Image (cartoon, rainbow, N blue to C red):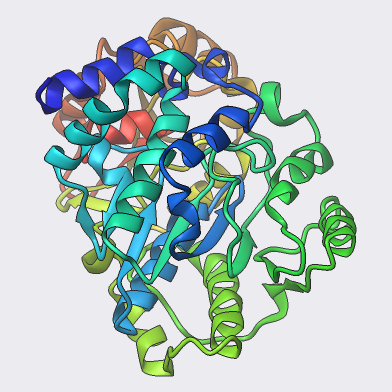
Length: 404
């Protein structure tokens, strides 16, 4: 199989949350562990950081990778989902894994993958760990896919664990309260391994403290940390992420990692250049200003809407779409009534029907029109906007994927 055929096999034959949602999940780690053993346990051959959280884990992972790169380390970065190409998930010092490595890995292990019916997540995690070990990275920054306790990444023994923020998302899988969701995230806390919590939330703090105590894991709540450092990732919500990142870096420094203040400052300022991260309050055009952001749940969208309200413009246009399992009735009240809306659906099986979205939004007083595709919605917004207007594109990672 060539690269495209290999991807088709991975995407179509095996369950994948990105397209199927909850039915793609295998709530056990036994297959991941078996595959890791089959590969010779590559995850034990390099140091790691493990990052979980409802919002901010992708940005925090990329900040950490960027700082470590600035410090001269060879850094593996595993994140999800991808926006354009599968290879975005697996990078070393900002360079994506090669097509050949993906093709050869799947070809070599296809009999095992088929025999054991591994999920898309499980095989991708195995691929990332195998690649990082083969390339002899100094450290791998590993972002949790979903939850934590039963996530395929949760077979590593990291230098530090980081949990960013807890908000309601994937409630059908992780639980319908913040403490239940926090319990799943707390599953990445390992014995005698420091854990950092970026944001203090009264509803979840006790969950993390209990788990940390059970595991004899030193715990740090980073919200009290004072800093003037900034990042090239736009969005005021990044100030919360920075605190967690700095606390993790301090643990590494205390463990003997050579990271200077200059490395930290430069790493935070060059995240996009060093890791090629996209979709975080990303400016796509000016006159009119067009910005996209992957925030897609109550927590993430609250930050995004607050950021929108700080902008200066003549009129606001919002191109928005969601996936079916999203609590649309819960998130739409966050959106400003004075904007003009362009309702669309991401081009995946999980995309929420555009007319359904328009009907729910209209009930809540949002005015706009439904469009057959993301691109047609954005084209309509551009046609209607003055040079001094502002166009925001978001609601779903998969909507953003179609415009970056």
